[in-house]
Amino acid sequence: MSVADGVPGNNRHVFMTRSYIVSLLNRDRNGNSSISNSRSGSRTGRDRNGMQTHHSQSSTAAAAAATAVSSDRHEIFDHPAMATAAKSCVFIKKLALTLCFPARTINTAQLLAHRAYIFQANNSINITELATACLFVAAKMEETIKKLRDVLAHSYLISSTQPKADPQTVPASVIDKMRPGVLIAEQFVLNAISFDFRTTHPHLLYVKMAKLAGVSQATVSAGWLILVDSYFTTLPIQYPSAVIAAGSLCLAWNLDCSSPQDISRFVRVAFGISDNSALLGRRTESLDRRSRSSTLDSYPEQASRPPRKIKMTEDWWNDFGISTDDMQSFVRQIADFYLLFFNSTVASAEFIEKNKAGLPSSDMSRRIGQWRMWLQNSSTTPVSPKT
Image (cartoon, rainbow, N blue to C red):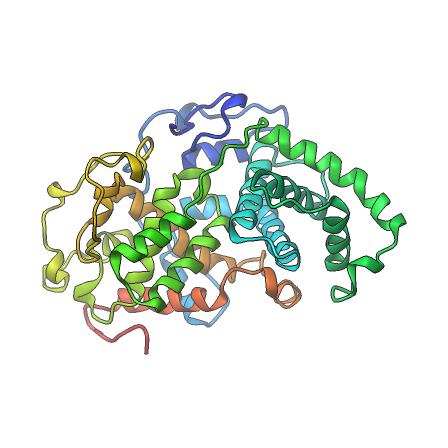
């Protein structure tokens, strides 16, 4: 697979650069997209942008840390279509949990939602109908099929003022009224993905990586939260599953570091921390030794030397065919997402209160906010972010 710097409609399964996603979101009403500027350049090096202040009215640690958020990554999340896609992902998660779907089905549905909104940002389909259709399609793709009536009944109850009612009590007339709209939305989703049902999941790979690394259960749990929450973003559209799994594990491990000397060097660079050799400790090895191979066509099973054990203090992701640039981009974007989601118009106080079950992890958002503040002050205040 390759990055879709310029992709025809029947190849929408390929990975897309962030600039290409922005060009699709910003195309005019006639469907013309100014993608000429996004067709040049590789994935590596796209994310080396200066930090720009992001203002937030919140006084929480997460809001304070959001000052390091870069405007180019902000552009996707602030787009109205992506804000709607995020709300759709919240509804998908709420609905899927009531139907006891596994994580891979939930994440596939969220991926479908993002693809649908990217390829037709100005669609007029009801958000509830589109979210329900995405989950219904994902259930068939992942072979965790549920009857459409059951899906519609739970969707109706979640949308109504009686979410805890028995789905069997939903009148048949209500189901019949909902069915046409969801089926139309399903056709819209299928057209958006060009009927391409190929998917790759990072979940199993993440578990394998965590076992090879021998990290603590707390780190494994934190990384799992990051992995599943990444599907609230366009990251799974930008990168293969190997990058999602490795990036989630690496960020979770760095969150558990109690000393600046243990923080990965590329993480410090990603957040604009000055490269102070006195603070880098074991990580003073030259960047020239890092692999610069792109992950666009590389998967763990294709790595030339699959590791038998992962040493978290080294650049272990290179053994999986993953470049440091992709790891850096993933960590920056997912950290920005956690800070922006709970400090934006998407997650208003009313929305958060109403949709607690479907939200990304607020604890992780708060933890990353504190961690980023600690990173910014690490040269003068070497205190553990876990305190």
